[in-house]
Amino acid sequence: MNNLPKVIADLVKAQNNFDSTAYANCFTETAGVFDEGKTHNGRKEIENWIEKTNKEYQATMKPLEYSENVQTLKAEVSGSFPGSPIVLTYLFDIQNQQIQTLKIV
Image (cartoon, rainbow, N blue to C red; front, side):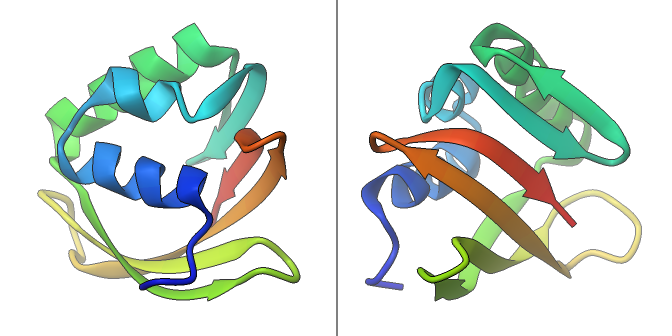
């Protein structure tokens, strides 16, 4: 996908490389991520969450569709979890080329 904002392209690349530090660096210091019923606040907590998630699921993302109007990305996620692959929707709030909030549904 060529129309992804740089920060989202960087996030996908970091996810697919299982690089939790690079992943967390896509977020502001005060960012929040909502996933699987839990909220992870701040860059360090986000890094710890994605590190644990990477070890558990080895999930990779393949972007399918991005909407700039509502800042949503649909991606096929594959990994070592039941039902893989699945399509998830990532809802972003991007401020100053960094992610302030991310909700994964």
